[in-house]
Length: 198
Image (cartoon, rainbow, N blue to C red; front, side, top):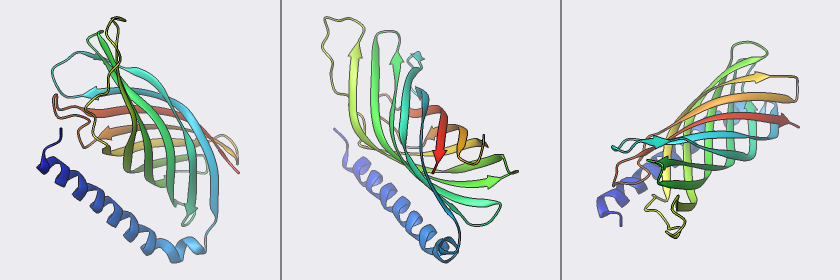
């Protein structure tokens, strides 16, 4: 069970992120209206793990899939909000696989180094959809975890435009809030994506 202070902390983080998102969108709305908007889909591989605590952990392979909208502010900068389903987790000491699935909302700022290459960075809100602890010993039934319903992290990545429609991305997500309190662990996810702009 989460303590009252942890619940308050989570609520404040959500409100701060929402306020930041609203201010950003309103502040750029006039520019966005005059610019091109690209819509598209993306999917790819997740290599996820947990950081923190004392246990030895192995990475898990998962996937992400969803859509995005890229608002071009000028030839150099754009804003790209996304909505993705992301499967993540970690394997602890070769005894149990902890799987956490999220609905993630990255809000990326993209800087184009050239026509082909772009750097991207931004915050990410994630909402827990499903969590499961699956033990390697088949005699032990699967169980729910004590995972938090909300996760906040920061993304840093690189994009490459294969052509005018198809692109590839690599991205690292570093968890700021904890997945669970005992032990105090955070998400760490490396993503490789392919996307298509309509």
